[in-house]
Image (cartoon, rainbow, N blue to C red):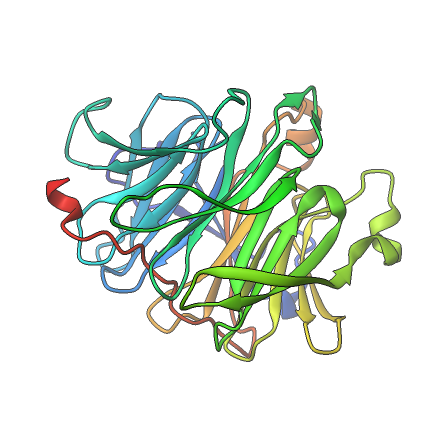
Length: 335
């Protein structure tokens, strides 16, 4: 399909080799190459995501069925977040944090907020979410050399109003690729993809601090992680039952994890290998949105996985999500 500024995505239901109990459909956008960072705005009924490689931010209005996108053109774009009480969004571009105004022409659409990993120009803000108090938590990764990440060059930060000065919460980090919180906000779950682990920290919501790091799941211990192309934990979200859902880059699947028993309790296979991120969406938060990528894929690989880069909707999963927190930024529209 052609991707117009206002367009309705084509639904491809039950692709070949799809098993009925997986219950998914794919939304295809032909110009999307590297989709990630899906986030649901429950007030506006809009799903946002980004195309990191093509430097575009996307919005799908569930009410009008209109799809909109805007090219930013300022470098790799990995994070988008709604802001409480504002028409603006937060974007993470390269290692910088900006306010974004959809109605303004770029680069005037951006308002600078903060820089992370100062002195490391090759680093990238790779993941970001808001906590229950509206603080921004963002994690960076080191520069890429081919397909390899320079180890231990990044960090996990928090930023909060009014100054939005970056506070280092964890260092070193190689590649932040997952942040979410327990239902009672007492635990922060965290993924550094290079460790192949899902970790947990005690979380002090009042002070915005983490402590007592421990491992919930070591993916390297599972047989499916020992394939020739080793899967990488690439994103995490939580369902209303307190279970974690994790995207497996190069693994072609999403897994469900019980953080209490530290066991994988479900695995949902998709017809693509490069799964980047996931988030709950829809009016009842019962649709699991899974983003995928064609980044660095050869022509032959894309021919084998033609729906790479599509957004997948997993439904009828027997559970759902909880509303994502929004960034707190007083008077953001007039910043």
